[in-house]
Length: 356
Image 1 (cartoon, helix red, strand yellow):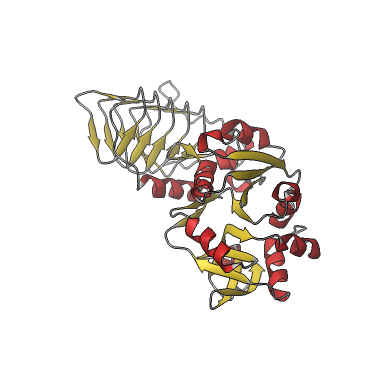
Image 2 (cartoon, rainbow, N blue to C red):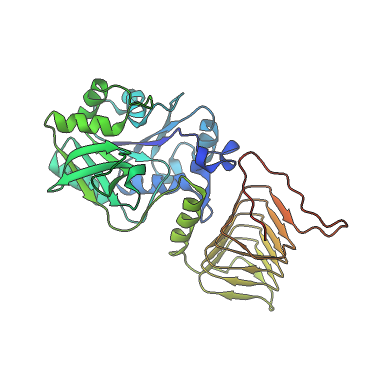
């Protein structure tokens, strides 16, 4: 069995961060989001992975992920020049997939539990498709399945009036029949080849499509609030590690706090779960629960909690606590000390800022 990971999307809901970097590389607990998907796939015993990339961010993904050797797998890259749908991504990956069964995994997916069991179920059942579902509060924003005894009897992409709350989570197992299905469908109203239409073609032509509702949490990390919440979920499972950091006697480290090599903590309180990357420096500050600070971040005379702060960013002398923040690389946030004391912003397109 092979796998493909779909990473060609532009990440418009995560702008301005995605103007300069792929959304799949945004760090969660200081690790690119895409790496969590690769780990889930390798846990299944799959060793041949194709990553579908777009023109704008493909090179960044190649540079960050490499050839797969650090996971003991082979990674190939397949260019999807235009995002013309999930089924189109399968179509352009046909040369890579050949006639093998495969796992399709959306690159912005995040799951708590292993999917190895589902691979086993798919291979034992000999069905043509096997999809994973979860119950959601807003099914109209997803592909939605109707089930009868775990078999899918209908599949609709983003229905205006959903008949169930069972959403596709972006993990699919297919045999070679899916290629025939994709060749038989036409683009949807939004101009895309929908994987839900291809699955519905299988159902209409009496092929077997099975589904399971997953255990454990799942997150679609497509929006800033989803990224911050996914970071929280991952930090729930981190362990305490202070061995490589320099911590002065005035500081307090409480709970599950993971500090990278060369971290300095001076007269500060760190309340876990928190992860802080290499060579970061915290001075006279408070870092609260569910916060990830990447490498070389500096926080001085400030308070931060429930946030993600990316590499080389400086936060200094901020008067009020920063919470629920997603801040990119090489950013400077500081309090004006000069007269006149005014707000001064340099913000990219589609930035958001909240003042108190």
